[in-house]
Length: 125
Image 1 (cartoon, rainbow, N blue to C red):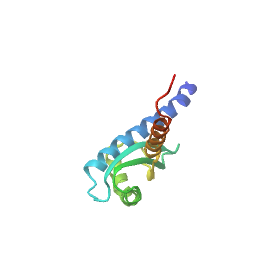
Image 2: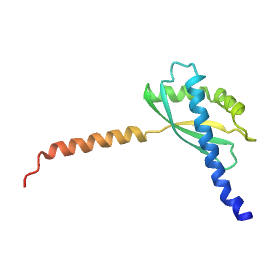
Image 3: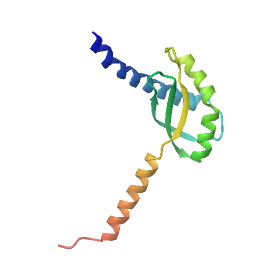
């Protein structure tokens, strides 16, 4: 039975991270009235093993990422309080927001590939 617990612990961490991501998405969309926070998408949440801290990775469709980061960090206490009311875990983590540049980098890479393909011109046999 001890082996079951060890394999279940990481699964629980993933479940908690996923639930935090879903609840935060809802809280940001419905509860935050800060105009500095534009269209935010939460990309993922990483929770420490003791559930004391959570890194929340986000991207921005509309708005300045730095301004959004500042606004989210200012709202972190409010959002954590909202999580207290929704989550049924002993410790609700302190939230740390991190701007995720993955989408931005993928877009830049696609543009470079398209440019390279266009510069090759039509292939001749």
